[in-house]
Length: 141
Image 1 (cartoon, rainbow, N blue to C red):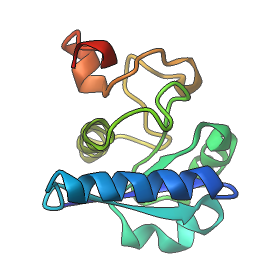
Image 2: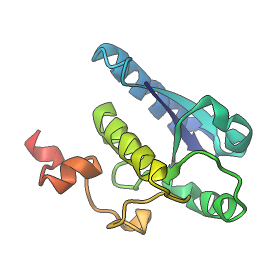
Image 3: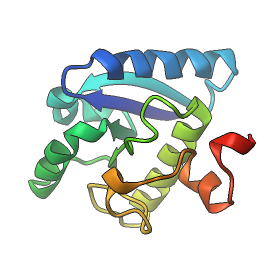
C-alpha cells in the first residue's frame, strides 16, 4: 500500500482534499492500494518517514524547489498541477503517485516531475499522467 501525503502551506483546502481522497479510497475499497493524509509543508521534512510520496499544492512549488536543492527530502516529492488540484479522483492521484515513486526508484531526483512535464504549473492534462499518455481525458471516463 502506498502512503501518500497531500501537502500545503496553511492546510485548509489540502487537508479537505486529503480527507476527501481518503474517503473515496475507503468507499471504493482501495485501501490495499493507497492511503492519503495531510501534512503541512512546514512539517514534511520531519514527518517524511510517515509516507512514501508527497504531493504538494501548486503554490508551494518554490518551497519544494528550495528544500530539494538543500537535499532535505529522502522521499519523492512532486507538485500537483494546478488544473488537477481538487479535480482528479483518487484513482488518478494514486496513478500519478505510483508512477512518481517508480521514477524515483529508477534514480529520480526531487522535485519529481514526469519527463514530458518539467514545469508542473504549465501542465494542461485533467487526468493522471498514465491515462493522459493513453489518450484519455476526464470527459471520456
